[in-house]
Image 1 (tube, helix red, strand yellow):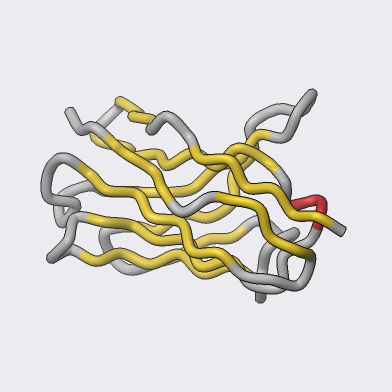
Image 2 (cartoon, helix red, strand yellow; image 1 turned 60 degrees about the horizontal axis):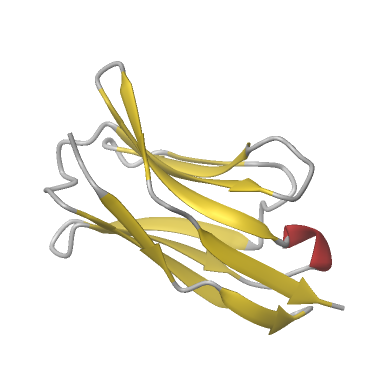
Length: 115
């Protein structure tokens, strides 16, 4: 089991950058997959990026080349660096941890990109 707390969201102009943080309540060295998802108003939650324990990363096509996911094991934190933000990136961003067959979610952090 793990508790996740996101931070770093806010309002930014198009073209700007934000870095989201996801602090875990336990070591992330043993968490197989950690990721970021987002949900825009009226839309389903969608995958943004994932990071595996082996170091592999995966990104949605819409964010490739603009977003970077990373882990800091010493701080038990996962980051999402978001550059060249677009209005369509506006959503609530959620951190996710997959442990065995279970998935755990944070409470989300709002990202709003103005045009």
